[in-house]
Image (cartoon, rainbow, N blue to C red; front, side, top):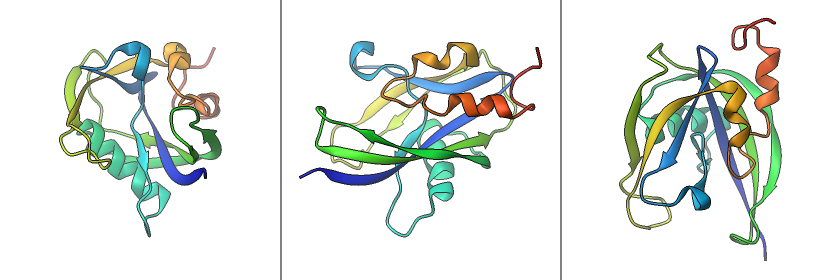
Length: 151
């Protein structure tokens, strides 16, 4: 039986850079480059989950700028699960796009071992490398003149 879950995906953008992270102790070939994302809790609105996940996974507080849409992602063969993903663009306080910092999950929801990663700001044109379909709605950022420079 395929489990169905609800997830959020967070695009925190500043100065034409996207907030991403890479795992510290897991090879890039397994986890790739990711954005903050996670499960919508029972009774929780997806927009609230996006703000919570951004803070929990990166230590950065933010607020929803806009909803970008949703898609269904099939996680098989990794696990028998499909995820309805709700994508959000989030506003965050200005910071240096050259900054890197550590974050992680000391107590993962799945009961696994603590996980750590390094957060950083990736130039938007390079964000096509996001893992596992996380970049599915990046093109929608182009519709926001405050995000991408005019050409």
